[in-house]
Length: 207
Image 1 (tube, rainbow, N blue to C red):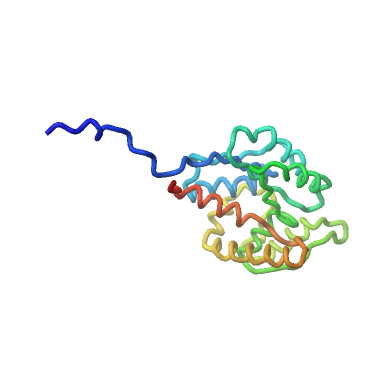
Image 2 (cartoon, rainbow, N blue to C red; image 1 turned 120 degrees about the horizontal axis):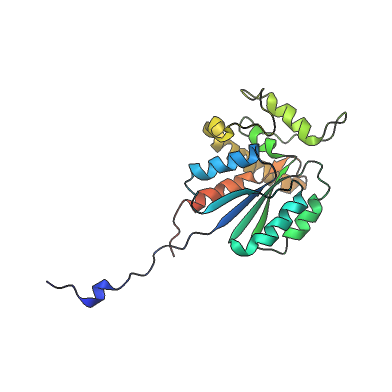
């Protein structure tokens, strides 16, 4: 029996076209490698590019994002607060651009790693010439299995800490809620929001 002509008509798409996403990292190893592993874990690698801007200051990273924003639906700038002098400038530059979001950690990326082990809202400040980031690193090294960790280390942190990821996400959300309530972002991180964005990208969205 011959098929009716209308049966050959192309069906209307059921799902939204996946967004193209750029993630720009401040460092070339620890944070970038971690997020590369996150995108693979959530099978979002076909739609997400994790890149390094060749710059390590927040303003330079946001300027790079602005220059590339027409190529992507969304851009996430993963930066540390620490003692960066251009942090406030970066926030101001990003604000008018709806598709650019700062994923900031106060004082640094290592706070996100710490939240895999415990909840904390202890503020970090310069002590004896050591930056807040250096103080955070010292605290992280006190956690189980992290005594040999060094910033920029070429190791699969995501795989190492995968079993603790749900706890880290819960702790990060709680810390951010308290930080906003207290009007004190030190310490806090938005990396749980980026993890959620990766997860969403792995799931087809119906029209």
